[in-house]
Length: 631
Image 1 (cartoon, helix red, strand yellow):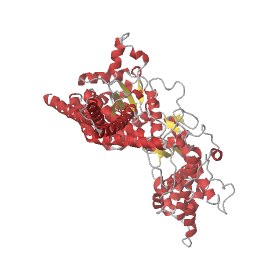
Image 2 (image 1 turned 30 degrees about the vertical axis):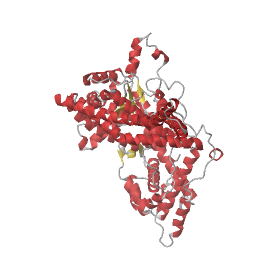
Image 3 (image 1 turned 90 degrees about the vertical axis):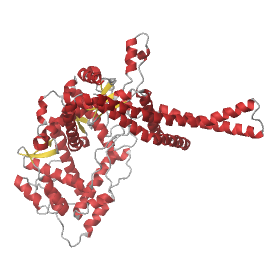
Image 4 (image 1 turned 90 degrees about the horizontal axis):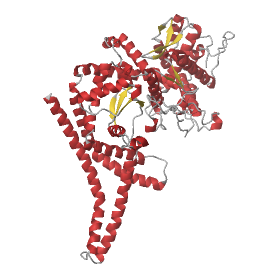
């Protein structure tokens, strides 16, 4: 215990010394701002007492006084911007104490064991991490009027003063995947950080750094006039200079705080924390896989899964069945999960899922026909089936644009609908006698990739009726990287990929109305224990954290051909859409997931040889000449 206490003291002392270094920089900046005023005062005092008289001294008094006024005005402007700028706050879902009394009790007990102040509140975030966040800035929500009545209710006053502690932000996947003991062990070093954070010097240094960071962001905002931009540039330069001066000391201060918190937490569940850290890495892998493979296709279709955290448990359980490295992790599921510490875990999961959809993809805060929740039992029908049929319909529209016949001349009657054979026959490698026309058509199609500005009259969509998710979806302009990506495909494949990219860009441009603000929360949803803290962060630039870069032309072409093959398998061979927790949408044949379809589709895209894919279709009984149902 002596060694632990010594480590805590060393870390805290290092953090305090660095905090004092930050405060000294602030003091030096203030001294530099006051220096011309002090010289002016001396000159004025000397003139009034008859010691500094003469024409030269009078000129110096006027010059220094004007300089002092200018410097003081600039310093006041910088101080005002730093004080009034709104520091960045992580988007979270607030957890009220009445909605999670057991969770608050566990955190307070943990703070008592660590002998540190308890966090003032708890919030959830759709991320696999946990931290403390200071939200004491006036812009983050001033106290209510009744909180100022210190005399009438001293208990409320004491509670208000204790609310200065930081907020504990917990990654929501931890609550659903971890057990109660594991969550307590993971949170121990985080909660221990409230001790050093309560020190006045460290708190003051953090406030100064956050203010400078917010001032830099505020002065970098666009949309001002020329004079305002000039003033903002000067204020921003001063703020950035001070921030660079504090950078090393601030980083070392945070390292000292983390070291002190880690040393203090050594005495609490140390053995269990080693096991819990393994669960942190596993949860991160499962959460990333769930978002990119499962949630992202749903968001693109205007549906947001309402139980993402439940999906993490299903994905990690599936991983434990497939991967021997994860064996034994599923045996923990018999213990009490940490989500039992919430009174209504389903409601909280839905709120976090909506926040994740808005952060990683974009979309409004309210639901509607184009932005609606979807349950896992409805995912296959609402997301997988609709995605495949929509992509297949787009593929045939592009083929129509390229002038590809719907049926061969010797085709049987009634086969002129959208068929898989049409796609396979078109992508088959043409005779190598004159490849120039095909390559020319690809070049011509690529020039249509970047759409012209679209007006409301052209799109037929009013400003308040544009689908929410599509407003923030990136366009798919063809770039030199796309040309390199399509270099290994056939000429017809490159032309089709370019046409699909252009069609996607046009569809997104029709649905995207520039300047449309995010719709406000519906009445009544801003209150309650599960409402996102939308008042604390700016949601006008969603998505804040896009999951993936825009898809390349090869990826778009492969996805559309795969969708067409799946539609043909569902309509002619009795296959069904399914959900794989680790790989996302999947095709089920006789209840078994097909795993080799991607290889055959890539072979068709790269070489133009439909033979392997046709053999795979014949083996499953899929009839590519039959028309399929499209959206």
